[in-house]
Amino acid sequence: MKALVYGGPGLKSWTEVPDPTIENPTDVIVRVDTTTICGTDLHILKGDVPAVAVGRILGHEGVGTITEIGASVSSLAVGDRVIISCIKSCGHCVNCSAQLFSHCLGDEGASGIGWVFGHLIDGTQAELVRVPYAENSLHRVPDGVSDDQAVMLSDILPTGFEIGVQYGRVKPGDVVAVIGAGPVGLAAIATAGLYGAATIIAIDLDENRLARARDFGATDAVVSGSADWKEQVLALTDGAGVDVAIEAVGIPQTFTMATEIVRPGGNVANVGVHGAPVDLHLENLWIQNINISMGLVNANTTKMLLKLVAKGKLPAEKLATHHFTFDQFLEAYDTFGRAAETKALKVVIA
Ligand code: NAD
Ligand code: ZN
Image 1 (cartoon, helix red, strand yellow):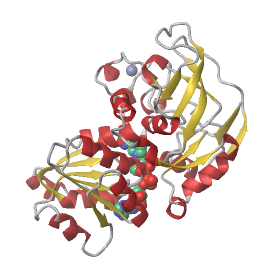
Image 2 (tube, rainbow, N blue to C red):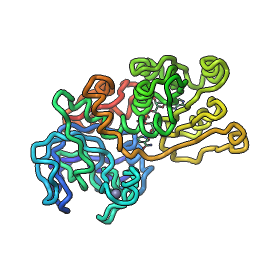
Image 3 (cartoon, protein in one colour):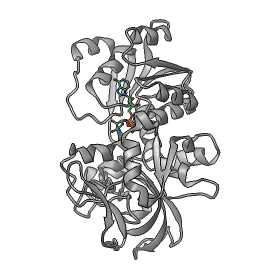
C-alpha cells in the first residue's frame, strides 16, 4: 500500500510500505477512504515531537471501510463504514473506566498517548490502517452522514467540545470567548452554541478565520493584537469578564490572554498544545477564584456528536474547505501548511 511516511524533521514522502496485518484478536484493518491533516502533523514534521520515530506513518483522523477483523471482534463486520477515532482505547483499564480514553493503559506494550495514531503507532494517512481495540475505537457511520462530516469526528469536534466546552463548563446564557478560530476553535464555537451560550466571542489575528467563526455561531469577533482587544471583549460583558475563556492556539501569549478576560469565578479551558512554558500568575488568579482546566481529548463524546451531525445540528462539513486525492498528498500538506494564504480550514484527502 502507499502511505505518508515521516522521514525526520522537515521530511515526508507518499511512498510504498508493507500492508498492515492483524496483530491481536481485538484488531481490525480499515481501508482508509477519507483522511485529513491536523496541526499536530505539522508539529511532528517540524521535529517538535521527538517521540515520533522516522518511518512512522502519520495521521490520526479518518473514515474508512473494514476489510479484515480480529478473532475476538464481534460488534463490527467486514464492509462496515466507520469513523476512526484519533484515540484507541481498551475500554476496560482503570483510566478507560473513568472515560479517560487518551490515558488507556492497554495491554499491548504502548500506553497513554502512545495510542494516538501517527504517534507511537502507525496512522491513518495511508491506504490501510491497523486499528487496535477496534470495538472501542471505531464508530459506525449512519447512512446520510458524508465522509466530509464524519472525518471531523475523529478529533476536531470532540476536542473543541470536550476540552473546550465541557471542561470549561459552559452553561445556558454564558458569555464564552474562544481564542483561536482554527478548526479546533471553530469546533468549540459550534458546540458552545449547543450548550446554550448566549454570547460567543471569537478572537483571532486572521480576519478570514473571524469571518468563518460567525458561520459556526460566533456572535462577535475581536481582532487579536489590536490595541483595545481586551476592552472590546470586556465591553461585550458589561465590564464583568467572560464566564468561560477557551484557549485554542497553544502559545503562552494566548493562555495569558484567556486569564486576563475571565470574570472572577470563571473558567479558563486550555485546549492548545503548548510547546513552551506559559506564565501562570497564581498571585493574581487565586484572588479571582479562577478555574483552569486542560487536557488531551478523550474522544468519549464522538457517538453523541455524530447524532447531532446526522440530524444537521452541527455543520461539520463546513470545516472541509479543500479536497485532494491520495496521489496529491504532498500538495494537500502544502495547502494546509499555508492556511493563512490558502484560507484552508481542513484539507480532505479521499
Ligand atoms: P490552527 O493553527 O489551525 O489554528 C490556530 C488559530 O489561532 C489560527 O486561526 C491562528 O490565526 C490563531 N492565532 C495564532 N496566534 C494567535 C494570537 N496571538 N491570538 C489569537 N489567535 C491566534 O490550529 P487548530 O488545528 O485549530 O488547533 C488549535 C490548537 O489545539 C493547537 O495547539 C492544537 O495542537 C491543539 N489541539 C489540542 C488537542 C487536545 O487534545 N487538547 C487536540 C487537537 C489539537
Ligand atoms: Zn484502557
